[in-house]
Length: 155
Image 1 (cartoon, helix red, strand yellow):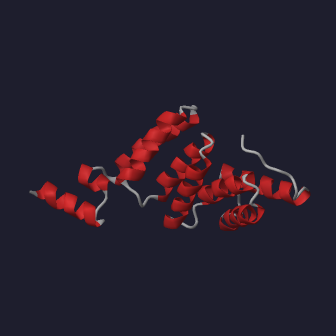
Image 2 (image 1 turned 90 degrees about the vertical axis):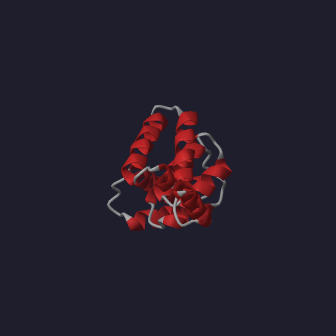
């Protein structure tokens, strides 16, 4: 009977799938660490599966959306990447990795205004540039300043 109550709460959005499955925050982040290892080693399809599952388990976690966006980005799935970065920012507007990722996508799509806004916002949040994404953001902004008409293709 309690499982039926849990599924009813899930359907109403009162709990997340992770709670129904008995997964706590630490367990989810252990799984995310596995996804990051796969991503880092170039096993993008496997990483995508892990992060898609994490987003399903906890659709309100900005980090999971951001990492899924990064996988889509590396797979050149531009629309899905943009959507996931935007979703990450919906849950944490200070997620600098999502801002930089979305900014890079906009730059690749020749949407200079949006790209500059996202890249600048990321650096404003953390001007000490403690993350690799912020170093990329600064370099991209400098490149834009030097040559504003340059095209920035995806890798």
